[in-house]
Length: 134
Image (tube, rainbow, N blue to C red; front, side):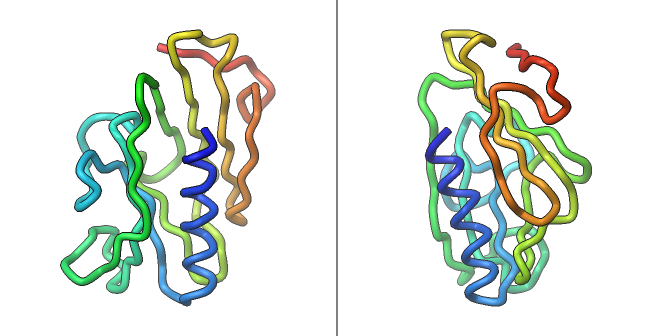
C-alpha cells in the first residue's frame, strides 16, 4: 500500500513540476505498460511526453514496483490499465485501488483517488461499504 501511495504521489508531483503529463500504468517488466493481468503484477510511472498513454523510447521511467503475494485491483471510469496526471495535478476520473493479501477482506485497504488528484487510504470503499477481496 505504501509503495503504491508513493508511486501515485510521485506521478502527480512529477506532472506538476515538469509540466508534462505523467502516467502510472500496469507493468510487469518496468519497461512498457500492459493491458493484460492485474495491477498486482506491478506498475511503472513514466513521463508521457507525447500524451499517448504509451511509453515510447526516450520517455523516462521514474519508478517501477512489483508487490509480492498481493491482489491489487483498480476500478474507475475510463481505462483500468493506467492513470494520467495532468500538469495541474488532476486526473479525469475518480478511481479506487483495492489491496488484498492472504489475510482477506478484514485487512484490505483502499486507495481512493479523487479528480483533483488527491489520494487517501481507507478501510472501506469510497461510498463507505466494506471492501471485498476475490
